[in-house]
Length: 260
Length: 225
Image 1 (cartoon, chains in turn orange, purple):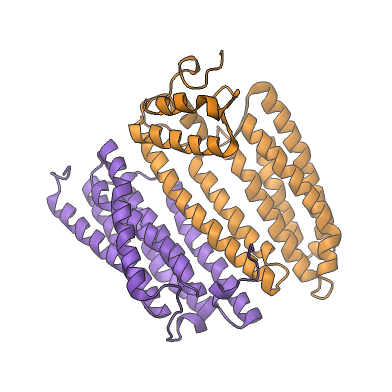
Image 2 (cartoon, rainbow over the protein chains, first blue to last red):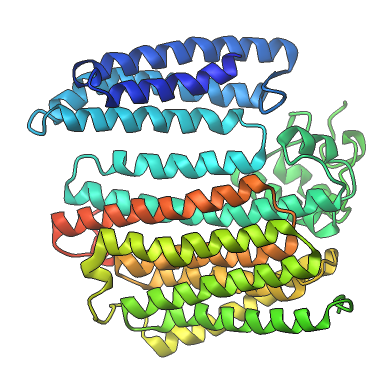
């Protein structure tokens, strides 16, 4: 239930900020809403740490450990940004009047809602929509100052992130294709995790090995599924050899070399 | 060829795909804003046609819904939205400034199409899906050409059309590889594309009002030195 409340509260705050009530109280409403969301996110994170996974609405919303971490980060940043906005936006919009301030808080709350929805939605396609919405809702927040630099930043931000989101859409379609080939499951993160050891076409294994190798090179270390860190220089040759096998193997026989 | 049960539809889909690629190259190569908008509308119609053909061949109602949504949003709604938000830009006949000249752009476009076939090949060898051998490489090619359009154009509206052309390419590939696309994804596309157009259109209008130009390629105050 907390998961649903986390998404509903910013939406209500956005509506109140845009209503006549928000002409004077948009900033306190936003701050109060983000404080409540922060408390709920802490509760969800604690529950997820104890039980492994929190679910609501018949697995429509799920939150595991990683989701809880992202949820916690987003709600902390959302709260501190709301705190900072109170004085800052009032100072910036002194000439423009209260209407611009209301627009700011209305968009801000919707943006925070889309950010909170991203780690919580179980369906992968819905999560893509949430990511896309974060871009579109924050575009006017980037260009809020209405100067040449702000508008340039907003333009570049919108074009680059929309480009990335549309390319990610192709990725999700191919992932969905792969999950259907592997045997039909609802297209959710839980379903994907459960299916990960079933047959995948060889090129997917190769592709995912390649991408994790690139990220391993970038960060200088390789993290195996058990989370133990090993230096890439030592492990690279064995890791590359293991990539020729299309199917993921248990940890003891693969490149990670940890004792579990 | 795994198209034995429906050779006529296969041939028609191949024709649609060829025309689809031609419009994608046209969006890269045209000189005028209005012409690229019209080419984008034609491209969306071809996407809908391909979805209908595949929907008939595979007996999928989802694909017919994709076709209906594509026609409603991309051929009817988007030109209206653009006329409302940035009318002076779209409907004034004028040449569009670009980074590369047209012959070099077309050469790069041809190279990108070859790259798309090379990239699609291992995926096609992995899983045999009817019609994917036409739609996947051509969709990827249209996607690459859209990215290229965004990169070489300096005006706001042609960059937006490039973004929408990428989305067309993704869906052209998508209708073949996932014919039973969840309804959610269709609705997402239905809502998402007009919202992108609206946001970018409003931003373009604001840039035009504030700076007196829509040549966003010349905005270079924020740059890493």
